[in-house]
Image (cartoon, rainbow, N blue to C red; front, top):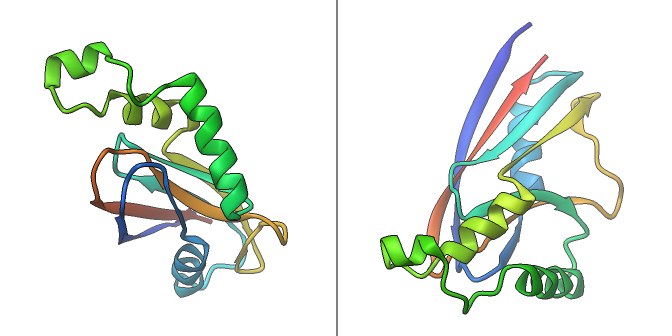
Length: 138
């Protein structure tokens, strides 16, 4: 069994910014020249999430509305009282969706259906550079 990894940076606008990272992840997996494996994609941020979804603007809008109903942006949370940075909602939203996903690699390709993409969602209240780590185990 071997483990390989690579990192890349993504610039984000924050505020529920949804960014399709499928091609970047697939390019990394292809560099490893591995036929069958497991790929874990991890965001090194507690204000972002990684999920698979149809990267379509209306679906992203709907997801943002659902998360706003669960974790409102304008509510004061204990984290905000302690840190005074006003982004507790971003940590909570990211905690709900998670900051990593694991996907199968078969025939050198990440297994996704034709409507599925790997997306990073940045919930923070400011633009940021986010680091994504792709680890492949065969």
